[in-house]
Image (cartoon, rainbow, N blue to C red; front, side, top):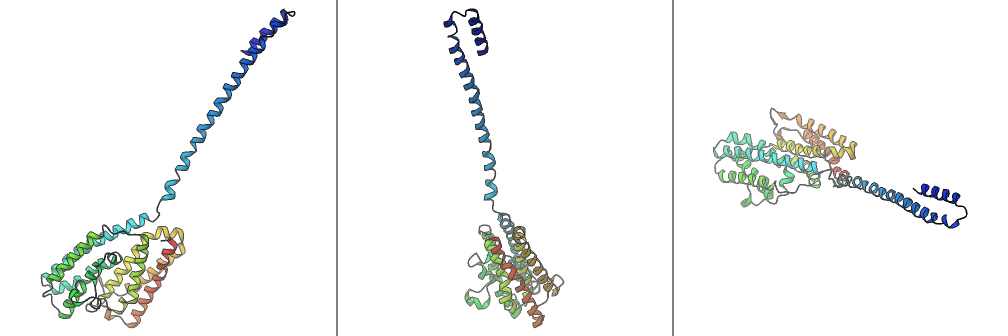
Length: 310
């Protein structure tokens, strides 16, 4: 538009060269037309840049969930499911064991004693975190006053030493009640990665420092069932933590796997059918080798906590 006006003014000036005032009005027209055009065209360019800045914000927000995720959450949840499943089986097996005692079936009671305990021994670290339940269920004769002693080992003594089920009904019923109480409490216990790592090590340390002497099942000599269950419990903890452990220290994970394999091989030579040999059938050398294999596994297991920062 401004070029047209200017051209017109020039033509007018050419036609009327003597009239100098006629060209003067063309200057304001040119100035007014050019300023708005320049100003209006540049403002949208400034406004267009703002949305570009806003578009980058979602990218920053998308990284927050990954930073706050707990890499061990799945491990603890998987272990909780394992504990609950084992406790369910423990309650059922205890019911069968108690039923045999109350029916006066001595042979069946003895048969079910060791296999029932295995469900409990696999999850013993959790049971030990629940106050008096562990001593009530699994307390040994030397650790509890005679008047308060009950549970598996109280029944064991009568079944093997006295060779009878007589007068065991109330003690058996109490064991079943305690097993059901355990089942209820495992639903609410807070399971942490630290508890799991510590529990795995404690399971093996207890075997190598006290159970290896044969004092746990001193009347039935079914200690190897307990040993095997303790190792299985520790192995389960390792398995649920393994994915994260491999990311941080693949060499340590491999060492644990190797030591687990060696220990399971050592235990395997004492298998008899679906069960294990009686502990008093082992030689001193066999007991020593078994203890050394347990210690060899406990050492790398104890390093998991440091690597996983729990």
